[in-house]
Length: 116
Length: 112
Image (cartoon, rainbow over all chains, first blue to last red; front, side):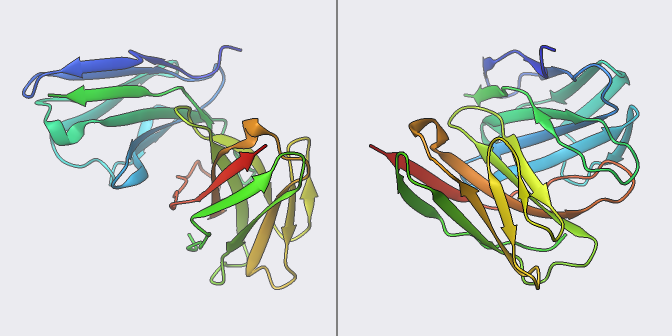
């Protein structure tokens, strides 16, 4: 399996521009997570989906951020408009959630976003 | 989820065992201890997890105290490639997927 795939790997944009990050989870996984990592705040969860339905979006910083999961094999995280403080590494992770069994989250390589 | 406390950094000589402690004194009976690590510039990677028994896999061993208030991750023969930030996370298995709450972790530096 190719693992979790994220694109782009690097993104440099100017303040005010729209940014779209993409994630393809591991085939067969039914849960998907978006995390953000900065030096100041560490690794924090933004939102996660279970069976394509958003379960917890309490970590989404503000209305400029939105996430969708139109099907089991694709998710997007959009920032519009982007601001310099959005500069971070954004990770996508997926897992197979099966009742009370343990879940290993598999992380993608991340997208390094720089907003100038 | 219970909060965890880890030392910010540790050093270990290559070939020696690395013992990474974690305090989780407020852990609940249904909460598991998970360990992940993050090698520089990569996404976090699962290492091991346990409830109350000691666990071992091909990567590491996990020792959980009898009262479950603390645990130790053991890398038996550390190599330079084990240099990473190690996160101890406590979470329950709730029946649906749930988030991982990462703390600041322990930065392990393996040296020659």
